[in-house]
Image 1 (tube, rainbow, N blue to C red):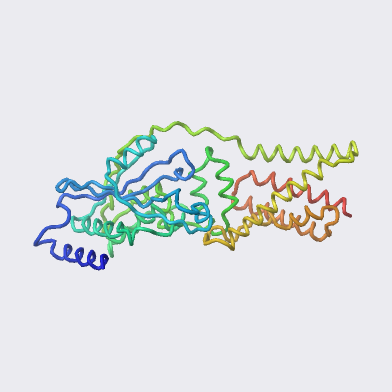
Image 2 (cartoon, helix red, strand yellow):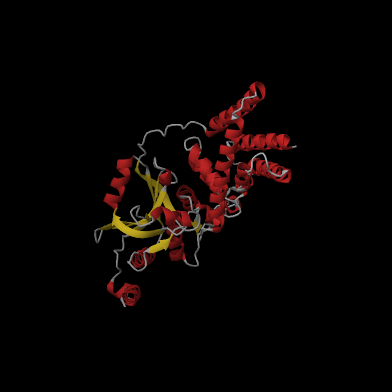
Length: 379
């Protein structure tokens, strides 16, 4: 009943715009807000929102599609399953900006070149979307997030006068994630490369690339509608003041050292013929860890709603087969060892071909070395 009343009310407002005035004043403006990266991982990709400012009525609010609650029951389980709920909420612009000022994050604004009727239509859509029964949506990092929701609301108002974007370079979803995490978040980038499968290597269109807020800002800045710019010049509302993110210890160095330790353990075993084999212990531990990772990747592939974690070829080197080899080490059939070596080879080609984290290379070499030595000992 409430929804029907609101729709009827909105319809009446839009129809009687000339005779009785619009919900917003003639000078009202709408703009897209883009926020720079933050220090936490989930803020490292930036943020987007829509601002409605009307000096005649005193309205100055931001509609934010990035609201979520860490305190939600089973939050991390829902996140892992791909069933996390986000929602849209409105807040006064002054409070919205204050949050980003405290974090030292930059904020930019692009005013939409909309007519007064289009600004009002956008405002009505946002108000309807912010109603309790309409505000929740099922979050997806690539296809439905704070940026794509802003993009969709803007383009809904454009209607048949859809904006024309520039032609982007061929970059995949994974490439954009690497762009956000380069140099400063290497361990997070490694985790992203571990979890994402082949769908993340899909080359994005300009529309798809706008899942990344900074790309959407760039695309809107170059977009045209009927030969005119979609937005005005970008205005800086807040300068970035956050400190430099410290460089993390490179994962490549860590895994290269692990490879050296395994080689050293094998050479010591051969030289001193110790009753207790350090190499066998390390091999068993590494195989168990890699096998458990493989089981987790299988769960993310088949047990969740994340389409981007499907067809994950990391399963070739982080294989559950390694668990079986670890349990029956010394009695493993040779064909299983040959099979796993072949899987390592394919995984290595995939890592190099798709430009994944180079830290995977010493991991694959370490596991392949252990498997090869077991194959030699079993012959």
